[in-house]
Image (cartoon, rainbow, N blue to C red; front, top):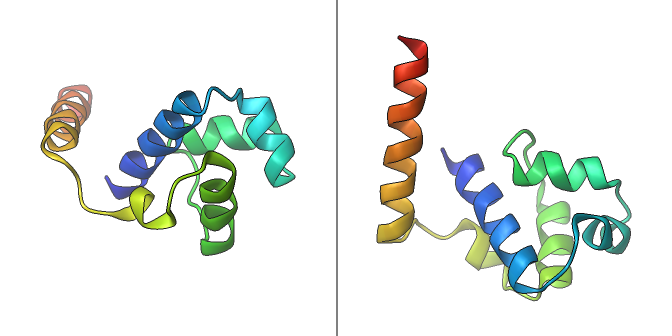
Amino acid sequence: MTRLLIARRVAEARLDAELTQQQVADAVGRGQGWVSDTEGGLRRLDVVELLALAKVLRRPAEWFVRGPTEDENAWMGQVRDGLEREAG
């Protein structure tokens, strides 16, 4: 669930910064698909990637990895419930 939470925060920070996925990708030297996969929780970020994203998105790196807020806990519960329903 941590990867999904970080992914959600990356997307939130990008939208708050009013940047497109392509703009972020260009700034960190990656393709737009890399940003999409990151925001979708399909890939893990290493420390270097996280620091690069934090700089471009103007957020402290700690913000991406801190514990979940109350709202994020509720969201993660909804995601978990949906995954359990899909698994049958």
